[in-house]
Amino acid sequence: MKLRWFAFLIVLLAGCSSKRTDYRNPDWNPEVPVKRAMQWMPVSEKAGAAWGVSPRLITAMIAVESGGNPNLVSKSNAVGLMQLKASTSGREVYRYMGWSGEPSTSELKNPERNISMGAAYLSIMEHGVLAGIKDPQVMQYALVVSYVNGAGALLRTFSSDRKKAIDKINDLSADGFFEHVVENHPAPQAPRYIWKVQKAMNAM
Image 1: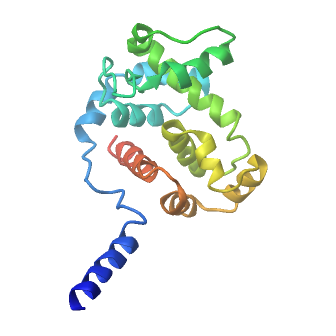
Image 2: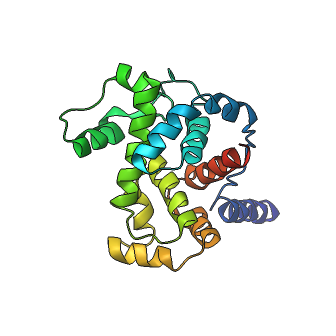
């Protein structure tokens, strides 16, 4: 009987603790990735100016995504400094520009093209599906989460209706939005990604 009770207690505690893993574990030191990403700052500044995106945000995302390695290709086939996928973000940027098809791997390994397309994708989301978010810090968090897990997945944690979702987001502070992501986003890496990007920005 005692053994059965002990097993029940373990299951109960596991259920309580498994709702959310700690997004800060394992720890992440941004110093080296940021240093490597900073070498691309002139390109980030040019792309940021062209698309109205913060060069510091671009640089932080490079640090988190690739550690400044332009030739990195992930297991999911995300390519280059900003880890763009040709079939999703790459195709989206191509469509916005009025081009057919999608970028090649060699194009995405080109630092200037990769950063320009990454900045374009952030701008497309900011002025498209995420348009209407008023607080600049909340918008930055929303962009970061949407970049890595998709804007639809984020908005659905608020409402299936985009306008209602944006209204609910506008009712939250930046801290409140972040807590919502921690508690409600289906992807456990979502809050961790915000946290890592903020650490990278603070390290610049």
